[in-house]
Image (cartoon, rainbow, N blue to C red; front, top):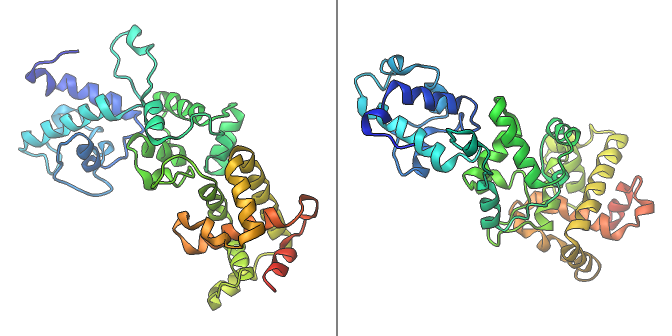
Length: 317
């Protein structure tokens, strides 16, 4: 839809932007960040400087918001940033004005995944979300990464979504690698998804006392506070958590088949398992992942029940 300058900064246009951002997954993203993507600077920074702060006001009230009083140029800049975001950086809405346009397929995320060499068919069960989000995806029959994305897009068009699904989609939309690696085993230096980072995510999601137990088994020195925390967890809780972690590890190996063969070779020959996980770039998490890898490829599946003692034996504990 073509607009002249007066229309672009009218009350009607502001209402249009408000409506689109009300259910946008980008509603809580800092305006300064949105502005950077649109090559427009925003004078204020802070976690509260988001579209959500401003869209609660109508056009007349907007002129009286602190920081915008008597600053028509800032109001225009705000509207420009929101408009450019919706036009270029918001894959969650298609900005359609007609039924025909609304029916068009939005392939923005497909293009982002292609750019990052991330397979669309990556199993949804391997994406690291909260148990609640995982349960929703499972209940809705979501099986792959792209299905997860489309589910989030459709959800965002109808309700205000939050939590880890929102942060995941927001991170992908802005190709924000620190956000992406919280949910996917993405390797920034090489792109694509990798087994080392996938096991690292399993290690990260273990409760802290269990991580400390595995670090202790690997010979890592713990502080007195960490030792006290490690000793609080029961053997039953340890076994249950590790059993779940190894089940996840087993499933990953059916996807990362070639890398799994390489890791098995490392575990059974060179012994430099920690080096395999160096791409994680977090020394302690690398050590936990290494313990899991040694358990995966050094202990028969039939003997994994209560395998913590076997891990201890590996390190002379």
